[in-house]
Amino acid sequence: MRMPKRALAVLGAAVLVAVGGTAVTAASTASTGDKGTVKVAVFNGWPEGEAASYLWKHVLEKEGYTVDFEYADAGPAFAGLSTGDYDVAFDGWLPTTHEAYMKKYGSKLTDLGAWNKEAKLTIAVNKDAPIDSLDELAAHSSDFGNRLVGIEPGAGLTQATQDKVIPGYGLGSMDFVTSSTPAMLAELTAAMKKGDDIAVTLWRPHWAYDEFDLKDLKDPKGALGEAESIHSIGSADFAKKFPEVAGWVKGFSLDSDLLYSLENVMFNSGAQSSQYDGIVSKWMDEHAEYVESLTS
Image 1 (cartoon, helix red, strand yellow):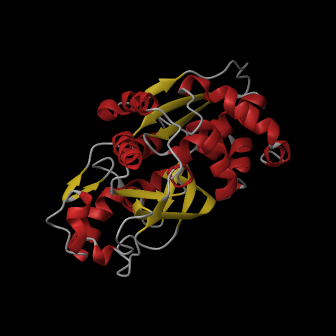
Image 2 (tube, helix red, strand yellow):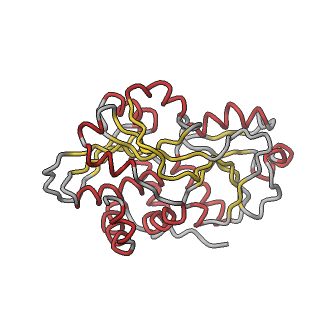
């Protein structure tokens, strides 16, 4: 088993970002900002969206924009996009995970298209766990401490687990623990280090699959839905305010292998969030041809 490289202190830092679901403005690198300020909503605990946001932060600052990050849970982020408090977010999971938010706010949002079409909600366990399918979990719940470790209570994955997975597979006697993504990852890290069996709610693409020996439990009832796409979601007037950026974002594509390589250097290197700008800048230099294509 490959041991985790990311210290729990880093996870703790992420928890501080998410406390209370309050949006926190992150410092951006120096830019003249001649073309205006783009406010990016970054979902708490969703590394693929944070990685994509940092990528675009550097791309846009190079092109003369100022980029401000504000971290928020998915619900407040979609609400903020609908009111124009945020300009764009890079982590809309469709058609299932964020369906409720799109139905509620969709008339005041702009779907800028999918940049990754390999997203999937999962229940994951350590690779050497004694089961391979969700329909075996109830009978083996004691192997997992009678616990299923989840993420934020308001997440679409949490809702799907509560409304479909638990009743569909008779898991009502298990303790479904929800708090935050960093807390789930801390428990996953500890269990993998000890060699304990653990079941967690997870999703692909996620750096945890590259960091740990995990497997997804089969979902014969389809409770977690089919593969989804990750969309860039803008405010209603995003294309009017930033037509150049909207054009670039509509053409944005990042496959899972390339995304994993970016996530790995950000989240699996033991780096602090204050180092992400330098890490992403170096990654962009190493993938210059791809980066240049984003604004071509």
